[in-house]
Length: 313
Image (cartoon, rainbow, N blue to C red; front, top):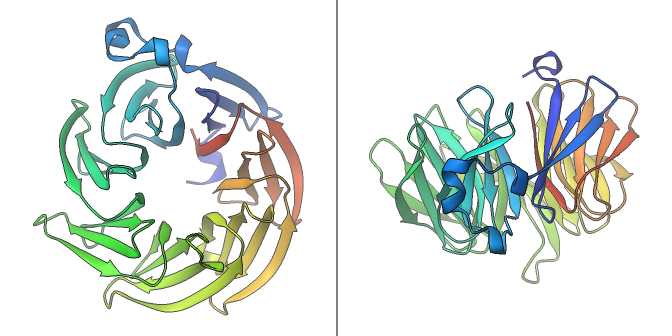
């Protein structure tokens, strides 16, 4: 997706039970939508409005025009939302503390970190098909569409679960790190590991999907949370919540090129495929707009409380 293919940025505000829509072509004007105002009448009975604590962790575009999905960690649910009418059309309940989803061949795959499982939802009818046990605290998941395999980051299990989507067989690859986030590139996968359980450093590793082995790794102090890969430039930008910085890394040479103080607690990062990064700052309740050519912050946009996932629409 190039910068000409979208006009708005959508941000999930975990602590506000809301979404913020930012017009990136019109001065970054923003408007916040509360979930409590978005419930369509036909699903009101499915949602407990007395304890309305949703806690959206991530948001994803669907295969249907104007439809998005929100992954709600506090309410153990997935919302199906028509973003044009600002209505929650449906809800499906999954395992405990869902985090991320992937869409593939008519199904939605969901990680449930507190259930040590993934859920599979049929996208068309929005019904839960099954739950599958995986490793400890699964967080991110990515699908290798060339090999029809699903990779699951067991963020407290020193392992990756691999599910073959053609025969439903699974295997577990043991690691010396706790994987948190993935990025698949051809025959390799970037693995971000956050400092935890006494580990001294975070890391980004390159993992070969055929040999199933790590062949390159760079360590960074403090707590990495997210990354975006600029493939044609051999660059990774990664956010560090521990020191409030954005790191620019040459992944071919395993070198930190730059370290920029963003401030607060930078979390999710999204690249517009041109020159801008959009970074949620969950401590200062804003989205930071960062120009990678000028290597500077160009704008900070106030949003709701504890902004987390973000997508272009």
